Length: 241
Length: 279
Image (cartoon, each protein chain N blue to C red):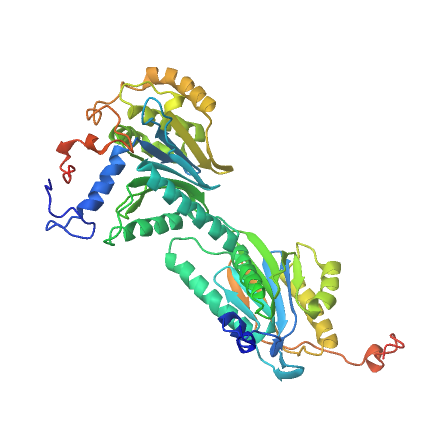
């Protein structure tokens, strides 16, 4: 065999273009279970590299009747996922037999897609949160780009894992009212806005209950930037810069 | 010789608008030993009659576990039944892998029927020679379907297929209205009585029948022989009190069991108005 042949692989697997890194990304999503269902929050920024390039991108979408999907990471991959899911829900509805996929089924389906794509070394570059209610059962789970998945009473992606989850662990309880749920989410989103450079002050909160999905109009949080910690951010971390 | 010029190939219509090969396949279902299914709101019971092919052999398995929520009873060519059961198992497993939830029974049945239908429209294939009673439980409750070689499927409250199934059907038709609210044990009892109806004279014993149950909180399973015998013993006494002697209707065709896998020259009763069988 000549070296020319060795240097020019012919099989299609080696010629495909894989996702090696993300281009346009969204930051954290935070979600929790409350008394009547699931609440989910995300801001509407999207960064091109580290440039805050887009400021009005919806990163929470309803999936079928019983589910809500929020995404962090590559936005084009999220859009591809939405195409898959639209098709999935369409074919599910076409049976017209009274059965429908619930949040648990959609979550598992997403898990299979994410893990399958990572096994092809061509991952969909997202962390996803799937929440929903079906037959009185609340469901909240997450999947990431390598297929790691779990369920919990409250979940967050990206920076939210570091900044929002500790707050949720502190303040979450299962009988949370809608108002209290929103309050906690806004607290999380405010912390993220202060400390996550890719977050923007324009967010949406979505609610899913047995009655269905409602996604809020975009709105901004009140902020106060005069904290001492903001004046001299390195004071508490001497020697780190 | 050929009595019918339209029956050599599945895809050729007769001028009367019939597909004889498909009808022959449905005839094969009638030849197999009986299979019975009935359901309440929460349970499905499948039953079948086991007939050994010869004195020296054991009988063939006619009830299959497809998934924890679905089981199937067959009549006709057991070999075809096995292939279809394997297909159903695989569909259930794949669905469960993808969605982490059980495949709705109705959907499995449609897939199965579509598979059977394809065989009625391809010149190089033959229809499956097996009828399947598919019983299962899903979100919308308990279901019982009959799946036929023609690709048709029907949902039933109770049904019987196979040889002398008419007697069982007559029994079920008389009683089905009460099945909806029946308890699990009453369903099994009705399944046993319906099975007995197909036996024509022969005594009902656990060695010649199989009973399987699936229901709320109860994954599909085949009852073991001891359990079945105990149930038979328990109700046989009652039967003498309140169940009239075996119906005469439908019990007058050939009594010797025409088994699946039996030699072809034992063909069906010729006077049934169906397509001629001797080729």
